[in-house]
Amino acid sequence: MQSDQATQPSQSSVTENNRGKAFWQNHIESYLSGSHKNKAAYCRECALRYENFLYWYRRLKPSVVKHQKLIPVTLSEPSGLSALCSVELNEGRRLWIHSESALCMVLDRLS
Image (tube, rainbow, N blue to C red; front, side, top):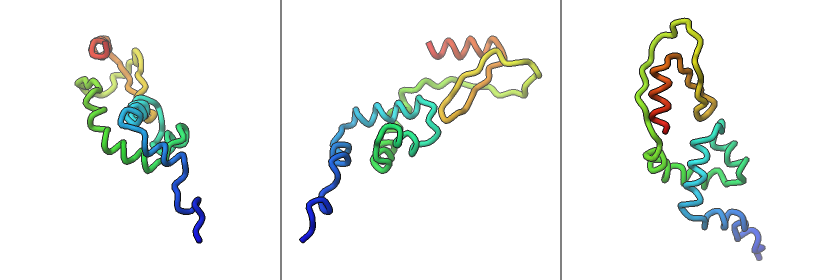
């Protein structure tokens, strides 16, 4: 005779699986806007099952990304000038802004 524990999923996985789209959309947005190094670390921090997070990430990421603002970027060689400021992006990336016109464009697009 098998025990009930072996055939039944854990209470935490049942609860997590039954959470709706809004719950996962909030987590996907939080992950994308934060400075989390990777999805597994985010799941550990938030006590989420990695497999469930990946399922919803693949399902919802396109709709989340549509809401993010995109701005055009022109790349050029650094002129030796120090940066006016920097912006921290996802996954530890940083955008260095060297000109006032670029800074104004970024600030205008973000407001």
